[in-house]
Image (cartoon, rainbow, N blue to C red; front, side, top):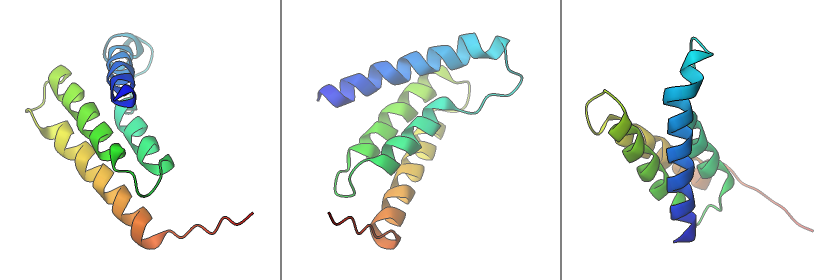
Length: 98
């Protein structure tokens, strides 16, 4: 539960930076929240599904602050999270033996 509250505040802060501060300095800025969702899904354990919930939280907060139709970023981040999870579970094999 603490992890999800942390990600809510992190995504809120990143959206504030992206929408209000970085716009004045860069002509094109990639979506920082979607990049963060990708990193969370890449670097968590394969068996955990909290990356999907992080994608849902990030997409919801992006949808609230965007001018696109509601559900666009939720759908995008959830599809990205599920795709990363499926690829990592089926096609990536890590043999870390000590």
